[in-house]
Length: 140
Image 1 (cartoon, rainbow, N blue to C red):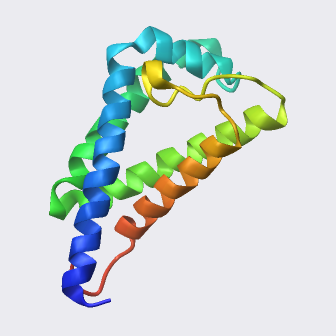
Image 2 (cartoon, rainbow, N blue to C red):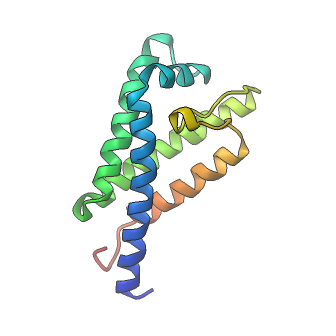
């Protein structure tokens, strides 16, 4: 891919990913109690850590989304999102393996069930973040 096309794909990917994670992070930030309930439903964290996670996760999502919009910080934002996607993927796999029928907790009131489609969406977002996190020879 030529450098101009690579920059255009990177910019479009960054804006798309930033929009998704900014929306998701703000929805959770505005409703921390509902997000804490969604986290608790996964039954992975001790009760004392649930509220902390309900505050930190949206903060990281918002910060990473904003970082994606600054070309010099894009790789850092993408790496944070890649990490968030990996943790979320593991949580959903764990919930599915244990037969939990829960909301994913992704988009506040627009949350969907944590299912195989949720995993596919997470993989797609993770792949986009990986593309942006990959060091490039062309300085994109």
